[in-house]
Image (cartoon, rainbow, N blue to C red; front, side, top):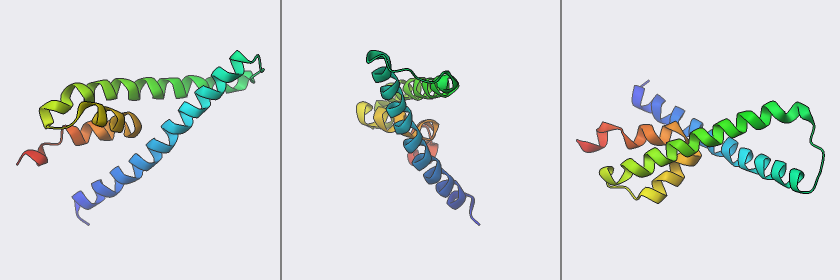
Length: 103
């Protein structure tokens, strides 16, 4: 098998999973905020899950800021690419800094 083919398949799989997980994390955090506002008791056993999803959201947010900063140097729209990178994560940054597009 060709290495580029494998890389493309893995990237596609990771992008789909990452988008689903980040969307779920946003929904979970929204539910947690709603529960706090309306005084609904949330099980303390969910606290580790909340911390993991907050870490994921913050790391994706930092990656999207980096992507927005460097996108114009790669002839890409900053807001559009930052949003894309927020949902797909590190793969978005790897695609942004891939040197194959320049040749």
